[in-house]
Image (cartoon, rainbow, N blue to C red):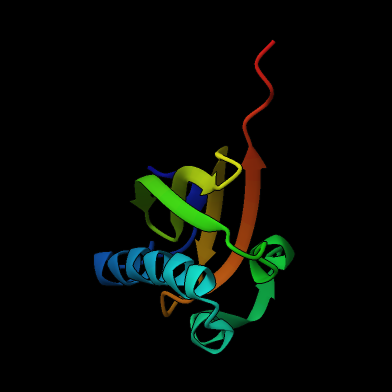
Length: 110
């Protein structure tokens, strides 16, 4: 049993697949400067996306992998031109909208 969904029914695969599409679209909209398009993917009670809402001018996300299960979508990649590696962990709403996001950056290699 998946303890993440203990006591409730896990989201359907349709919601998860929709969430994956929304994550891909979110990066596309941010990279093209379409904040209205980006906003259309967000759940009304969204938490933790301040970094994603203010992309650097000329920044481009290169997604190398997306992993999804239930109401969680994880995107891994790099932000160009800095080539900084990141991992974004998205939580989906019951409708597959983006409800929360936590971003992690790779540490410096010593």
